[in-house]
Length: 303
Image (cartoon, rainbow, N blue to C red; front, side, top):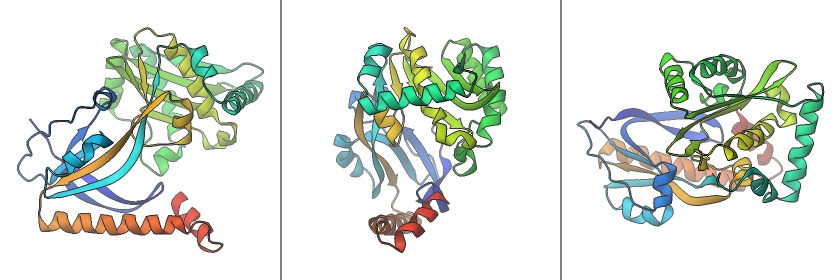
C-alpha cells in the first residue's frame, strides 16, 4: 500500500532552515542501482489526500519527461550522485587521488596517530552485538555534531533504528567505524549495505577535533575495510555534493530532485513561494563577494 507522509518543504539557506511548509507526499527515492540503470521510475498511485510525489536522484536525461507528468512540477535541486567502485582495490583507488589529496590524508593520519601515542585507533563493528556497542558510543559523538544540532540528521536514537542496525548486522550487511583518541571516540561512520551497494548514511565527528579532519581520516580507513570485503561492490555517497565526496568518488551521475504535485491552489502557492525564495537565495549568493553583504550571508548560512 502506497503511503503519503507529511513531508517538510524547507525554505533553507545553506545548512539553516528558516521555516518549512508540510505537504503529504509519496516519496520515490532512487537507489544507486536505479540511478546507474538510467531507467525512469514508475510513480506509484497517489492515496486519497496526497499532494503528490517527491522524486530524488532522478538522472538528468529523464527530468524533462518526468516534469510533464503532473500539473505542477518543480526541480528543487540539482547535484551529482557520486559513487566509488570498490572492486579495484584500495591501493589503486588511493593512487587515483590527486597528489595533494594523498599527502593531505597522510599528514592528517599521522597527526591523529601522534595524538594517540603514535597509533591510529580505528575500530570496526559488524555483528549484532557489535552494532549495539557501536551505537552507544557513536551516539555520544553524534549528540555534539552539527549534523544533529543544525540538521537533525545525527545517528538516530530510536529502538526501531537500533533494531534495524542489528538486523543488518545479523545479515552481514552493516558496517560501523569509530575513531578513538585516548580511548574516547571522536568520529563515527555508519554504512548499511544492500545488494553490494554500501550507503553513506550517517557520519559525524566531535567539533572540538574539526581542525584535525577526523572524518576524512576515518573514511579513508573505512575504505580499507570495504575494498577488502568481497560482497561490497560500490560505495554510494547518496544525494548532495561536497568536496569530500568529489575527492573520494570514482564516478558520478548528474541528478535532480523533483516535486510533482496535484494542481491545487495550495500547491501552486507553495511552489510559487519556493521558486521566489530559491531565486532570492541564488541572487544573494551572487553578492557574497560584496564587502558588506558577503560576511552577512556567511553568518546566515552557518546559522
